[in-house]
Length: 387
Image 1 (spheres, helix red, strand yellow):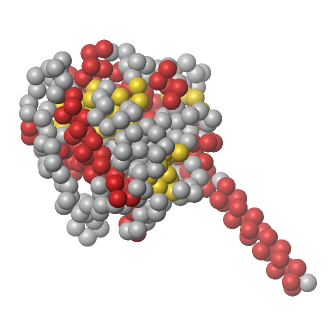
Image 2 (spheres, one colour):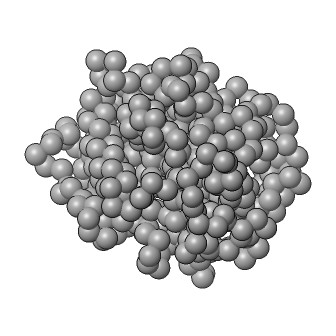
Image 3 (tube, rainbow, N blue to C red):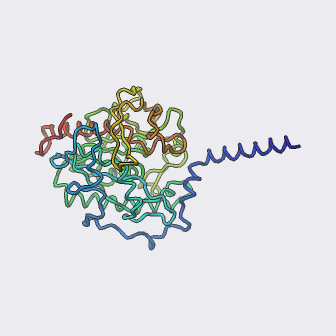
C-alpha cells in the first residue's frame, strides 16, 4: 500500500513537472499579467521627446551608451562619428501594475541602461535611444489577446514618434543604423515597414537595421519590408540583420507557438510567426548561411559587472555559432555569467548581443565606413577609425 502511494505521488510529481515545463512561458507570463483589461484612459502619460529626460541616451551627454569595456576597439567615437544609431531597448518592465510601463519607471530604465547594448555602437555612431511606454512582458503571452496587442500598439506609437522627432531635430540628413532587441525588435520591424521601406530618401540613408531577439519571417521582405533585403554578408548596407540565440539543444517554443508580428492587413493587426521561415544572420561571420563558425572566431562578449557597475573586460572565443532553421545555435559559454540568466528552453535571449559584443561593434564600424566611402554618399565627417 505504501509503495503504491509512493508510486502515485511520484507519477503526480512527474506530471506536474512535465506540465510546468510544457507551459513554462505561460506560467512566467501569468505571474506578471495585469488583473484588468487594457484601458486607454488609464495608461501612463506620454513622453515629450523634445524633453531630454525622455531619452535613455543622447550623444551630447554622459550616459550608459558611452561605456567602452576593456579590450574593445575602437573607442568611443561619438564626437566625430559620421553616422547615427537609433536604438530601441528590449522589455524591461515586468510589473503586473499595468499593460504598459511608465516611460520613466526607474527600475525598467535602469535595467535598459545596464544591458550595455547601445554602447556597442558608440565606436561608429552617435547614439540616440528613447524611453517609451513599453508593453509589459505578459503582453507577449497568447492569453493576452487584444489586451497585449493594444499595449504593443501604444508602445510602438511612442517609438515612431521618437524616431520622427530624432529625424526632425537631430539627424540633419546623416546616414543611420537602426538597432533593437526583443520587444524593441518587434517595434523596429513595424518602423521599417511603416516609415523606412516606403520612403526612398530614408532607405538611401539606412546603413543597416539590427532587429535582434524577435522572429522576423523571411516572407516580410516580399511584403511590407520590400524593397529592403536581408543582410547576406559583412559590409553590405541598406539591409536587415536578425538572430535569436539558443543552446544547441534549446527549444524555441515561443516562436513555434505564440509569437506574432505586426500585420496591417490582419483584422487583429498582428499575424502568427509559426510555420514561417525565419531570418538568421550569424553575428560572428555576418553571413546568412548555416556554416558552423568556430569558437575562436568570436571576438568577445561582455556583461555588466555586479561590483563595478560597468561592463566587464571582453572575453573572446566565447561560443561556436551556427544558424539552423532560423535559430542561432551556440555551444555553452564557459564563463557562468553568460548563462546565469537562461530563459526557459535554454534560451540565451538576454545575451543575444552580449555574447557577440565586439563582433557587432566591428561589424557596425565596417558597414558605416563602407557606406560613407561610396561615391554616391553625401559628404560626411571622417569615417569611424578601423582598429
